[in-house]
Structures are given as structure tokens and as C-alpha cells.
Image (cartoon, rainbow, N blue to C red):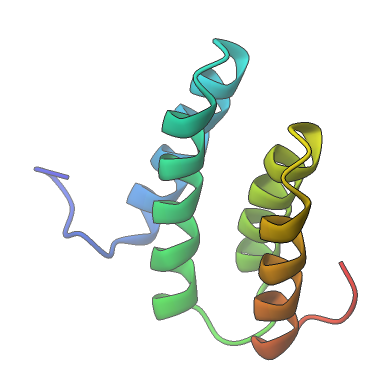
Length: 88
């Protein structure tokens, strides 16, 4: 965050990678926070339907589904649909 602005694409990639580490360490809520930051940046910067934004959606959806957070998963799927993605 000190090197890049709060909305730099490289920062989104770093958040995703850190989220993966936190997930492996079973720090689910920290992983969620990082995946959400990455998604937020990508939704702002990238055109609708971009593959990196889809990747961020899938990371967060997988986290929710692995921890039986079904209602949050459904909400995120609806949001993804509104942002140009079909059924994911």
C-alpha cells in the first residue's frame, strides 16, 4: 500500500496472494478481508467481465462455500451476475 496507490492492479494481486496464505493458515476472516480488497480494486479498475475480476469472485466464492457460508455465496453470485458474469 505504501508503494502503490490503494487502487493499483498489482496491489490486488498481492492481496489475493496474501489471502491464499491466510486461508492455508486457517485465518479465514483475514483471507476473506484480503480477497474482498482484491475484488474491490479489480471491479473499480477493470472492464466488466474481465478474467481477473472473475478470478477474484471465484476465490471469495470458494472460501464461502468451503465454510458453508451459503447465504453469502448466493449474494456474491448475484453481484457477479450484475457485473457481467453469467453463472459462476
